[in-house]
Image (cartoon, rainbow, N blue to C red):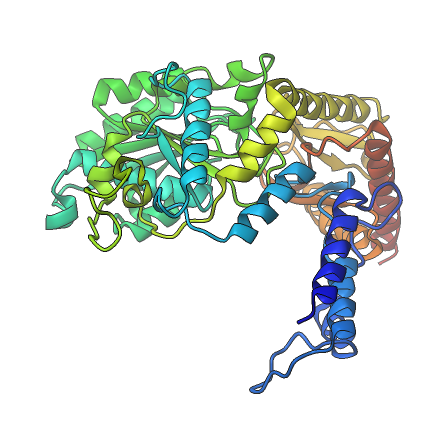
Length: 504
């Protein structure tokens, strides 16, 4: 492979990074699977034969051009489809640099700079969360947590830590006889169920606690569920509080949950994968009041902060528990008598080799500062507020399904003959069956049209049993013009789809 090829490929990546699609550019040049396979067959097939020969430089460049053309442009300000978007270019460069250096964050000797950066970043995140760390030691040898590959893995690790605290010999003796229970909001993340399955607790061990209309756990219902489990001979192991639910961005009352956990000696884990970044903002950090009382807290910086995926921090109130729970003491790698052994983090986690995820966060934080991080959060909420106001002023074309006051806007498009329609509160439940079914079928049809034309990407999902649109704001490049264009597009597609439905 020639240097010229490497330079040409790198140049395409840099050009895309610094000048991504915007405005009326397509969010995606959509093609079905068979169309994509055909396109690549004409350049460089996606499928790999039993014998894979060297491709020419030009074919490789052309293949990269196809990748760029037909991928989803998550940097586009009209991509509001997922709870990630708009990677910060500095974070991308940090990711590239970490990949170029190609080391692992397991030991200090293999990653001296990155180990110190990881410890420093975890220490700062823990300070923001109010965890008991020493502010005079910003780069500790024992960090207050670890980086892990995603929020679901962070929750898995947290539940294993809770189990280890409950039964310290679980590592050697295996699971004890106790019937353990994990409590999570009905609007919480499915990581609770997956973790229970992987840990051998069984999915029946997960108790879903009722949430209010906006998606926050109801503390009184949690207290009742805990008492009921105890009365039935089960042992409450952990409560998972949610700081920013995936769909409605609701925040549980963490202080109320902490009171219940303290009363019964239950591990409190906070899933702040989405909403944890509110801690960067003085205006919005109150949403996580009580997080400092949690035993563990998982936080995805690749969501609202634009750090490239993955970048997940799991913070631990008592970080000494990590070694006790996960250490295997592999003497080929973790020798106590080698230089700087106290800085080795690899034996404090289930993984051994780990990506260097701290560099891209550290570099971005240094480039943007606390003020820049706060501005990113404040602007996202402001754009969501603007959208909510536009929906309220839409003469009934749109109706909110959940009020919301953070970064997610959940709403429905309303056909002209049903306007005005109130869906918030108990409005969805009050709908006649025919109207409910009709509204439920509209978002998939509108989304398909939007996706096919590439004008925008906005997700939909059932809320209170009704398919509704969800616009998520976190990309700082989104403008009010983008919001107006997306709403106008949904209205146009909705009108077309509704007319076809009426004719049919």
